[in-house]
Every structure is written in C-alpha cells, then in structure tokens.
Length: 264
Image (tube, rainbow, N blue to C red; front, side, top):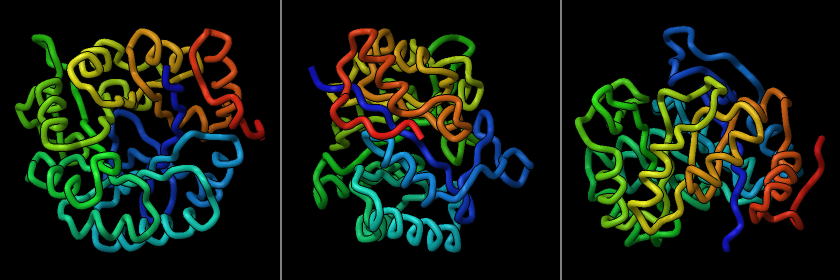
C-alpha cells in the first residue's frame, strides 16, 4: 500500500501567506496575513512534509511575478516536491512555473475554460506533473458542483463527472477543495472525497476543513483519499507534520515515518 501523504498548503497573496474561510477574498477583507512563504516552506521541509502546495490567489500579472519569485527561492532551499497553482490559463503559464522550480502544476479554472490545457500540459510535461484542482460546493439537491474564479462562479459541472473527464484528458492527480469546509476546522467533506476517489484511478488529495489530526486520519481512511492537505492548523502551530504522521501511524495508516523531521 502506498504511503499516505501529508501536504501543507500556502495561499500566497502579494508575496505573503494568507488564510480565510470558505474562499474569502482580499477585497472583502476576508484574508489575514500569517507569514512569509519562504520561511514557512523551510519549516515544513524540516518537519518532513511529503509535499508543499502554493496557491497564487492574487491571479494578476503582478501576483504571478511574486509567486514565481517565491517559488524560485523555495526551490533553492527545500527538497520536498513543490506544487504551484492559481491563475494558470495557458501552456506558457505552466512552463513559467516549472522553470521557477515547480515539480507539479495545479490547474483549476483554466481547465474549465479550456479543457485542452490539461491534455497539452500532460503531453508536454507528463501526466505525473499535471494536477487538476477542483473547487467543489455541495448542491442542496445532492451531489457537488464545480466552481471557478476562487469559488465565485458556479459552472453547472458535476464534480465527479469533471474528475473523470480530467483523468481522461491526462491529469495525473486530483485535488478536491471543499468550499463549504474551507477554513471551518470541522473536518473534510468525506462524502465528496470518497465519491471522487472511487470514480477515478488517480491519487486524490483532500483539501478544506482540517481542524486536527483526527480529521486527516478520517479523510485518508474513510474518505479514501491518498493525501490530506491542510493549512491553518499547521500555520497556527496547533499541530505539526510529525505529530500528524505519528497519529496516522498509530491508527495503522501507512506513512513515511523514516522521513519525519523536527516538530519545531
């Protein structure tokens, strides 16, 4: 059985790491500054994180320059794999992120606008380097709908069907972001994660809702995710990557204990 991965996530706005709830936006005062991305990346690398995800939530030309600079500086100092997403709309955007040091590029709204972007990126860089990121919101009548533009725009697309389409287009991994659970610390959307995990033959990364280590255990065990992504609980120092991995190992889940770093 493949080891379950623990992945800290840094939402970067104008060169700083920020946090919000349910995809809150900077222009609405919904974000708060939590630190320097390079310093935080170095800390998570030392803790033995399996990967690190950066999301550029500025999504402007100025913001893109900032995230490229951050990526370059992180790649120079850290050894863990780095995934970067946010505002990726063209193959040129994908290329720029790889040149800055990304190991994988995450594509979200850009894939909905032009699904050939997934195929072209996979053909050029390999499926293992292309991640389809899906922002999911629960429908009152059941199921989940894909949203784009930072959660602002409903697309009418069914989340499970879109994940299946992403696999067919050549994506090598799915990140499922729950808009409803984001930043709420009440746990991941286990039903949505399990539905996507059972529909595709790709690694599925659960995102949104982690409040403590047991939430991460639950989504890996009962949500059938391959990896759990979290932000606030790590940024606030409520737990560390080594502490989470030890809790998972105690629960009988396979993790890379030999790569545990410091708890500091």
